[in-house]
Amino acid sequence: MARVEVPFGSHGGVCRAWRYAAADADGTGDRRRPCVVMAHGFGATRDASLAPYAERFAAAGMHVLLFDYRHFGASDGRPRQLVSVRRQLQDYAAAIEFARALAGVDPARVAVWGTSFSGGHALVTAARIPGVAAAICQCPMMDGFAAVRRILEYSGPRQLLRLTGHGLLDLLRAPFRRAHYVPTVGPPGSLAVMSSEDAEAGYRALLPPDARVEVAARIALSVALYRPVTHAHRVRCPVLVQVCEHDSVAPVAAAERAIAELGTHAEVRRYPIGHFEPYFGAHFERSVADQLDFLRSRLAP
Image (cartoon, rainbow, N blue to C red):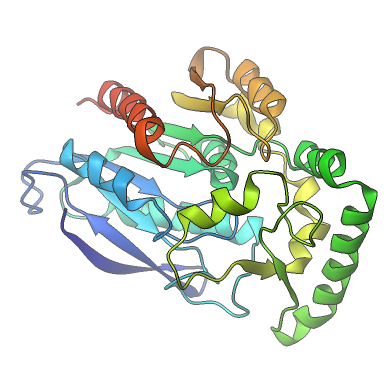
């Protein structure tokens, strides 16, 4: 599936995206089609196993805008590898505005897609941005406080104290646009943001060979305060929530609370798999098929 690189502005910086044209769309604006705006989860970039989703959406007749947040991948921003919830939500909003103005895109039929950490972003974006037509939240992180408690369960209080210490050290460097880094993922017992039993192998399987597997440590000081579930009651568009029932990273109970808050706006699919499995093989085929059914239904003219 052909794609082109496109830049767009976000709060003084530049994000870079891959634009996939809808199949049999000529891009002249003669026939406007839906668009899916996509970005990755915690510490990851657009080239980490998301292209197969984008290709399926484009083949089904939808435009796709798959972007890197500022501070990550091909996008601008210093320091690198800075996970900022506020800035990432700003980037989603800027991407939607950019997508609505693209030739061939119907601005009334723009959906937002997120997975893991960005599954929470998709929910918050649907709550905040008027006119979002639909949202997909795959294995979503719906409650940072619950996710931190999950780290406490599998790694103990020492891990949280270590991450907090590194976060404070990183915060001292923030005024100088510098960063102190911790590994994004590691084996059980290691210093890493994610160190559950399946985290290292699962996360690394998503990544290209040259990927940076580290983030600015200051996110450890604020991630517990990010609770997308508290925004669910304000969503007014259809939301597909895909729950991985054996999720070791994004607590399932938080996703179920978000589903309850969404009420009739929620469409739910549950899978007996772990957090890092929807991207590959039969699990990918099932997940993307459910997403396509949802998008075809909810983004129909």
